[in-house]
Length: 223
Image 1 (cartoon, rainbow, N blue to C red):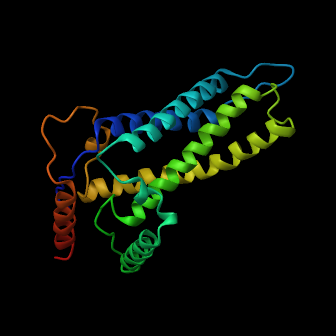
Image 2: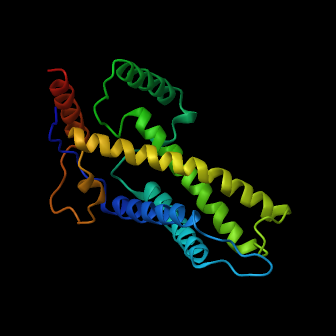
């Protein structure tokens, strides 16, 4: 059963850098398929050039994301994104993971709540993954010798970059796939995530709204 959900928007700056980062990373992944890196006897093709510059753009957006995360007063708390050093948050993460597993075993999808411990921790891991990917690509851009198969620091950076690329593909497919599932179940609206319009009215009590929305979705699914 589809339930129309009203989930408070993230802050405008969060939505802006999220959209920019997502588009830059998607462009990077797509251009990585047909690109031809430069070799001693020829320059890289057009796709390689786009891949490089979209990578630099991704680094700028990821840097901006960290600034927004540090300075914002609205949205998921940094401690929820990175719960690994808090015993209380780790306990909550394990409890939430068991709740998700129990729901999946019962062939149900838990109500969408991006501020819950498990989704928040996964988002945090995704942010670290994208940061490492963008950073390794940016370092390669400045130290490369024109040979992506070179050894030393260049080879080490490229090894990290290529290895992380597979994880980024997996994260992007899983992240986007679950977002589509929740959208069509009525738990959330993708238009709210991608909207770059500024809020015209206060959002009210976000945690209360999220809790009421989750409860209504759970009740509707239990019917």
